[in-house]
Image (cartoon, rainbow over all chains, first blue to last red):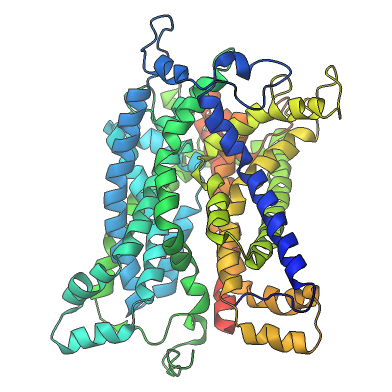
Length: 289
Length: 319
C-alpha cells in the first residue's frame, strides 16, 4: 500500500522520515501538554521569569481552589453548574440528534426518491449557518416562549445543529452495509422499517457510536449560541465559563488550564474510542459515489 | 469496483447521477424517515433565519421595543448603512484574507503531513494519536491557549525567544497587538485546530491508493515529486473535497478564536464579520443592523460551502 523508496538508501531514508514525522507531531501536540502540565503546577512556577520549563513539583491546588476546598481562596468558578448544564444540553441533544439524523441518513443511503440531492444539500447547508448569525433571531424568538437562559432551549438548538453532520456520517456508514443484505431481508418478508430496525441498524452500531460522540462534542464545545442564549449560571456551559476567565483583570492561567483539563475529558475518551470508525464514515462517499 | 457499480439506468437524469442508481424505490417511506429531521431544522434554523431577514429590514434596537416595525421606505436602510460603513468593509476584507490564508495553508500543511505519515514505518498508531491531540480542544480553548502563548509579558512564545536569545527581555513582541502579527497569531491558532481532521482524511485517502500504480510509475523512473504531483494528488481529489467541505462547514468556529484572542481589536485591526455582528447586535443592541450583517455572512458561508459541495459531487462522478 505505502510507497517506499527502493535501493540501498531505503533504510536510511526510512529513518529520516520517521524522525521528521515524530518531531513534527510532537511539536503539534506540545501546546496541549503544556496546558495539562500547567493545571498541576504551583502558581510560582507559572508566573516567574525566566520561565521554568520542567515542573519541579506537581500539585492539585488548582482543583482545590476550583471546588472551594481551600478556605483561603473564595470560590469564583461555578464548575458544578457548568458541568451540569454542559452534560444536560449535550446529552439530551445527542440522543435526539442521533435518532433523527440516523433515520435521515438511512433514507439517503438506501432509497431513491424525488428531491434526494436538494434535500441532502439543504440539510447540510443548514449546518453552514454561523452560530453568531443564528443566535440573534433565536434570542428574540426564545425570549417570547421562555427558552432564553434555559438548558432545554439550548438542547433544542443543538439538536438542529447536530442533525446534518450525523446524517452525513450515518449515510456513509449505511452505504458500507452490502445492499444484498437488505434485499434478502425483503425476500424474507421484512418491510422497509423492519429491514432497517432489525437488520441494518444493529449492524451500524459502531457508526452510530461515532456519530453520537461527534454530536456530543459539538454541543459540549459550542460557544457562539450559548454565549447569547445563556444569561447566568442557570444555563451557562463550560465554554462561556472558560471565557469568563478572560474577563477578570488578571487572568488566572492555572485555573483556566485546570478547567480546560476537565472540559477535555470527553474528547480524550473519544479519541481513544473512535479513531478508525471516524475515518471510514467520513471518507466512504469518496470512494463510492 | 466492477461488482458494485451497476449500469446506469436511462431513468436517471444527468444532474442526479451522483445518486447511486442501485438505490431502492420506496414511495413515501423515505420521506417519513427524513421529515422529523427536516421539520426540526426548519423550525430551529429555517424559521429563525427568515425572522432575522425580516428584522434586518427594520431599525430594531433591543432596548426600544417599538422600533421593530417594517416600513417599505426604510426597509433597506440597514444594508445601505453597512455598505457605507468603513468598518464593515474592513471586517469583510479581514475575513476574506483570513479564510484564504487559513484554508489554503491548513490544506497544504495537512497534505504534506499526510504524505509524511504515510511513509512512517514505526509507531504509526501512536503518531496518529498524537495527531489527534488538537481535536480534543474546543475552539474557545484553542483561542484561550494561544492568547496565553502569544501574551507579550507571560507568554510562552516570547519567553522562549528570550531564552534562546533571539529577542531581548525589553524587546518583547506584542503578538496580539501589532499589525499584521495579530492576524498571523489568529491564523496560526486556527490552522493548528484545522490540521488533524484534514490530515486524517487525506492520510486515509493516501493509504487507500492502489500500490500497482506507484510500482508502474517507479518502473518508468518517476521521481518522488512526480509521483505525488501526477498520481497521488489527482487521485486524492475526492478526499480533498470531503476535507475541504468539512472545514468549510466548521469555518465559523474561527469566531471563538478571534473573540477570545483579540475580540477584533485593538482598534478593529482584527475585526471580522462574526465579531462585528456581536459588536453591533449584542454590545450596541442594534438587532436590525446586526441581522442585516448576519444575512450577508450567512449568504457568504452558504456559497462557500456550496462551492466545495459541488466540487465534491463532481469529483465523485469522475470516478
